[in-house]
Image (cartoon, rainbow, N blue to C red):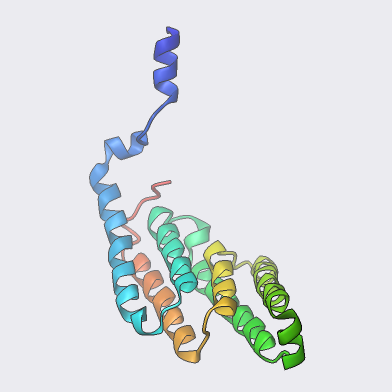
Amino acid sequence: MTGREGAANQVRLLDQRFLQQPGRYLAQCGLATLCMLILLAVLEAVTNATVLASLGASAFVAFTMPHRELSSPRHLVGGYLVGMAVGSLCCLLLRAAPSELTVLWGHIWQAVASALAVGLAVFVMVITGTEHPPAASLALGLVLGDTSLDLVLVILAGIVGLTVLKWLLRRRLVDLV
């Protein structure tokens, strides 16, 4: 093999598996797109950009790695339950801070509550076996955004809906990555 042929083999813009089954890749990514379209349409009234980003990352996990443990219902729904609980708790902590603290240290106090949300969510997910990285960003988004019961319920419905759709299609889905 010449140096030129070796270099050509090392630089590939497209995954070889995609070239063998482009329809499957397009279909599964289309499902992720459709799921997000439905979620975005429903969440539009109670939107929070950071929370929506976490659902987008979960759609990626669910439809590109459908048979991996990370996209199991335990991890998808369980991770979100942990992220929602911890994020909501840290949001309440931030809102319950004395006004003197928030006036003097508002930015620092928000940073502390935000970091605590991520760290605590990661810790609880790891010890409960519900690791789902997008759910850690959900905890952060709930602290940084306008958290409400409506938002939490819609997010829960969104992740359950995504999980159910993935489960219904499980025999047709393959791991793309």
